[in-house]
Image (cartoon, rainbow, N blue to C red; front, top):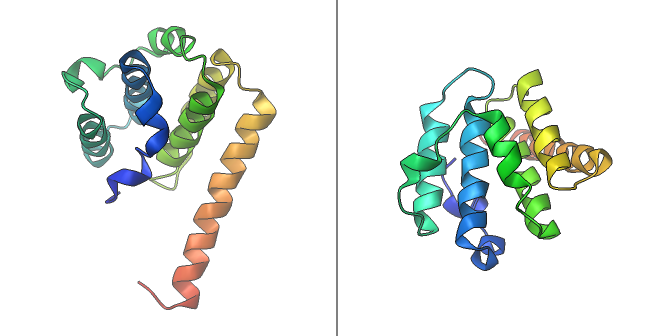
Length: 144
């Protein structure tokens, strides 16, 4: 997790302040939903939020799943909703273990934003394919 642009591309430039807060609040919640707190993930999300000009990032840190799911319903921009699902899938796969809690949370968040379960699965499979492709590249080009 070294490149901040991987998590904060230009689609957030058009998001409202409220949408950005919800976006990062959701990522923070995902990072702890499996009961494991990864400081590297938290620090990465914090840095990304600060890069987006979000003040009081600490206020976005929550583990209240129901609160987050109610909040994501405010995201009406389909592209932003799809990007949030993508970022959640990427974050969930960082530790190479996709827990049942993470899977369920991603599905609930996606559905709350009106993203069909088939689309959520499609995005998740695309992320998995990307991870496999990158690992294969390391082997082919003998990169450690």
